[in-house]
Length: 257
Image (cartoon, rainbow, N blue to C red):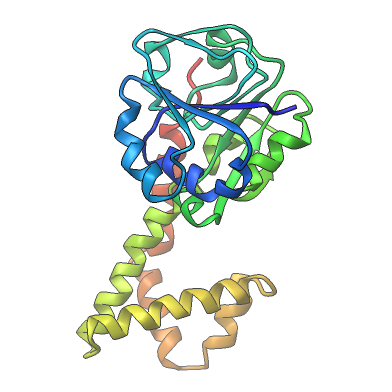
């Protein structure tokens, strides 16, 4: 089914996806289109992806027979006109509804998906929604740069910004605070970072078999140090602040039609 793959856009998320799905691109005809796709050329050379064709385009893009990845900035979608019928359109444009996509492009299959930058390592947590039964080849493409989780409503793709799209930024803030806390307690920065990194690996493994509550209960002892620290976080409203931040994120990216 897939004979041509066309990326429209060449920013960070495009690079992350290309790097993560590199093995899936072998033997495929792959192109990147945009106003100045030469900007991605050094990255492609560095990653051994310089077999990808670069096509500069100011106005009209022919999508005929291509699986189209829309990875440009959402507001830039209307900067181009799209001619021909694509094989499928896979859109990573936050807040851009299927209705809008279908007004711009023609294809039998449309898939909205929300990846994150861990795609660079083939570890993206990606949600996706399609109003039709998307062919397995398309889902395999999404799974080639991480885990693809299907949701049953379009609005849940944007809602998933709080669980995958923006989560790494939120975790980065919390992680930096933990590292700084280690330094404050007397550890060297490199020591604190190494310990926190391994702690996240351990937490990830534990989370595969236990709930967050079970993990916490395992660590906390009566009148111990950990429960004392957790009580401070609760007093400061950290849990509520996280939920408010996630809610604000989800509201920001509600689809516009």
